[in-house]
Image 1: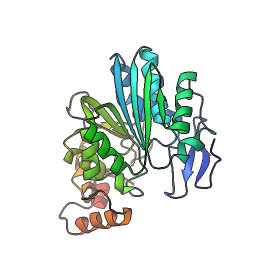
Image 2: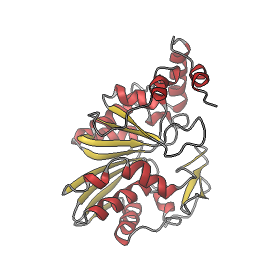
Image 3: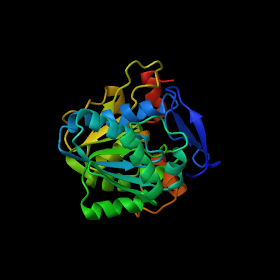
Image 4: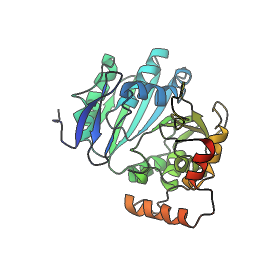
Length: 293
């Protein structure tokens, strides 16, 4: 088992589970409101896995596998609803040391799920009668291309990079267009991000988007807890008027990475240049109109 590294400092979250804080990106891997809870609510449940689990087989794509919580929550939900469902999991992860270090802070999962996470972290592959899983290590912009060439089709895609401001490489129109090609015709893509740039990029990739609402928002700036996307608009919660107008502001100008190899800074600067010459409404004016503080 890998020792905890200064790059990833354990942080307790409100539901008692732990996440890591990344010194490289300046963010935690999960919401501090609850890492385990987030994996269930924003990914496993948001992609309709309780219903999808009635199928005999499912395929999952976990982008930015990280600590493995999204995959774990998905397997728990699927096998709770259908113990006979055979699941294929592909996880994309930049650094194998993250899932290895996560074994030291892992929340309690069922024994079969815990065993899969351990074997993935140690050997990058798992093969059991119920689960075929693998981790593809490297830049997701490259590893996703292998999946596209293979014709991989996921019933659920978990899109969980660090925030667009910190990791724009994995939120661009070009990357998300490749991700969309891995989404099955009846599948669901879920992400914690509600950013207008991300939603615009998903639309440019050809997907319909819906909101992941907050049960009881406490502040004006809390209008959604994520985004769900599909090839069809059915079974999606439509964007509110506030969210629709957000997409029309300069914030809705997406990130672009034409050759899928630019640095984060280059991608950010390219978007800033496009925003500066745009005639769209400023995001600050939109905020003022809606009383968002």
